[in-house]
Length: 361
Image (cartoon, rainbow, N blue to C red; front, side, top):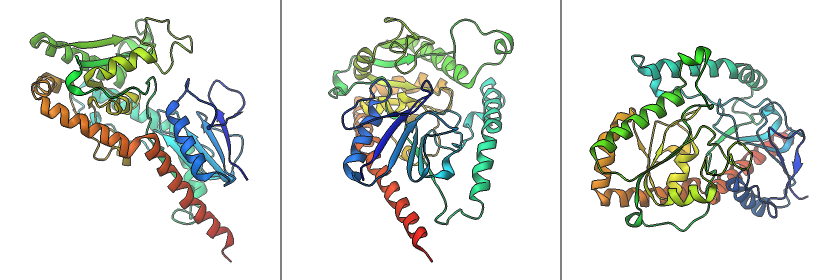
């Protein structure tokens, strides 16, 4: 029996059949299209049903032959159907990681992050309790249905030839939003800034201070509609945000890619920068397995940019090594081939467990 694939996104009422070998999901994720092609080639004829979705409350079918792959959910909630399928793979995972900024309650960012973490915790509690209740007495036994975290991969990015670090003319690159919506905040938003806004405002302030003291080639594009495929969805006009082609070309020409947190700690820029061999400067990431030994440079305060950027640009040997390390990490850990192999191993192991459980006396 052949495998079946469906896509079910937030703007769709019903799931749509999908053939990953012949249909591209470029407007959503070329990354996952390629991953599923590797999966289909390895597991062809296994009779599995795959749902690629943004939905957390429902999927069209469940059972021991169903695999759910959740692309979106920055609040790391537990899908309602996690106990009813073979296994679930999920971007952002299904566990809340306390932001390190919470430890510094002398700063506005610490209080804003604490407030967000508490809000996220309350929002995800019902589904988490349901999952725990249904798994009571089953954890560590064949009845357990695991939820595996997945990397975000890339969004608005083309597959370009890798440009040597020595040929790149842009020192520092960032394209994205600062606030969640256009215009000035009103009501309580006038007084309480989100962790994303506080982080990115601080990053830009210290980048400006660095540029005031050093001759830097900076590529900076700010727009509050900078989301995946914003032009295609009609959320922005050409010129307001970079097209996928221009975004890719400019990032490939950059030595350093700034990857501040967004609504959550994780961001596409982290992966996109390392995929292109940029030196990625970011904030602490969750303790997911794929971040271990990643070659990104982590800062706990964006003021570190004022020393870090000049140091990196003055040491081309360090840039070259980080460039090589980033490319190696991408290829070995989170490339489409690597994640496809990881998912295949997880699915195969879980099927063996379930088969053993179903045949046990």
